[in-house]
Amino acid sequence: MAEKLRLDLVTPYKRVLSEEVDEVTAPGSIGEFGVLPDHTSLLTTLKVGELTYKQGNETFHVAVNWGYVEVEDNVMTVLVETAEPADEIDLERAKAALGRAEEALKTLSGDDKKFKVMEAALERAMIRVQVAGKNR
Amino acid sequence: MASLKDIKKRIGTVKNTQQITKAMKMVSAAKLRRAQDAVTAARPYADKMHDVLSSLALRVDEEIHPLLEARGKGKALVVLVTGDRGLCGGFNTNISKAAERFIRENKEGFESYELLIVGRKGNDYLKRRAGMEIIKVHEHLVGSGQVSYPVGALLGQEVIEHYRSGGYDGVFLIYNAFQSAMTQVQTVTQLLPIVPKEVDENTHVAEYIYEPSATGVLDQILPKHIEVQIFRSLLESAASEHGARMTAMDSASKNASEMIGKLTLQYNRARQAAITKELMEIISGAESIK
Image 1: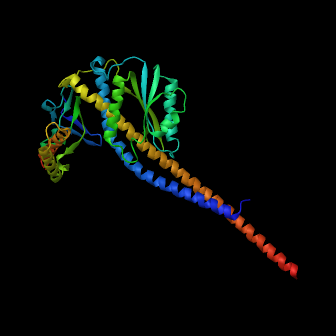
Image 2: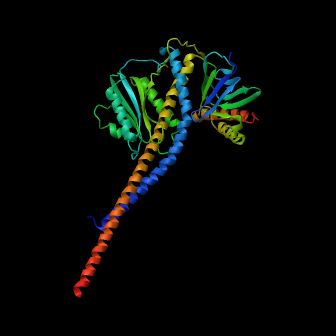
Image 3: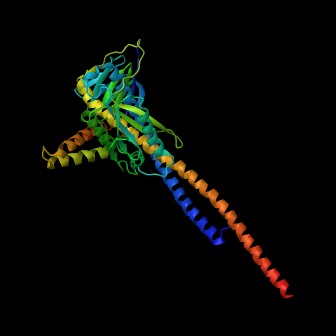
């Protein structure tokens, strides 16, 4: 039995992580799921949310955007559009974005095309605020 | 022999040209660095995506999704990525020739090919060739700045649309892959249908668990995959173009320096000859009055 799981986290703009970890929890599109070493092969999509992984006693948090996950032979490949580790998130900026999204949503009606866009922005900002400050 | 004035004029012209080539070289060098960073950053994602997809294509029945299905060998679409601007050595010509060769040699065995060209230069070259069917040209798609993901995504969606409803049985992507500032590798890849990964028969292929469902996952991932691969090819091509232009402009500047050297030498010789001639005239003039 393998003891560790390899976690590769990549975005179109850079490789964010490539580490040996003990446990990963990811926001699947139909609910959060955990992955331990020796997990069976799995392919699933992710939604905007918080991905956490454990190395020994330490837990790390990453805010991720839409993407998907493949697990095979103890390698977990996470392909997402954006990924921000908690210590890289600028809390002030995230809060500002959250405020902007909330303001915009108040003025827009539900069937406006922009509504969906702002709703997604709000979701992302909320996750960012939630994740920021969790490491450390 | 050219007069002093003519030579001087020539030197001036060459110097002007050299200034331009030097400036272009500097600009390309700066752009190259950024483009190169972008390409190296995007490669892991695109490679991983390709890995996942080809291992996926191996596992599932191809009937499960239209983008995986091999349909036969009728008409194929060739997406050719070239540059909009010249003055970059053989960059555009080489890749256009590669596309022409690909179609003429027809190793893939399709009945006919049609081209979708990104970049003005590829169109300039191929529209004059016989038997090249160009359905669409995207000029100035990338512009002179960085390639942004939405540009790749839109082009990807267009390609998928063509594949779904345009009666094509395959899509190929031809672009310059960036290797170093000096070298570009002309790359031909099959974009659609997705080629399954090659494995030897003994390898056990485990079935995936899909969440929420196989089709649900594929519906999202496959279009994404095409977008990413096209985005990557645009990035690769942009970096290659800057590299090629930098190299071309560097050698142009060197040639100009060499030419200026030669012309200066010629100028000095002519000047000396003129002085000697004048001196002789003065001396012989003085002699004759004695």
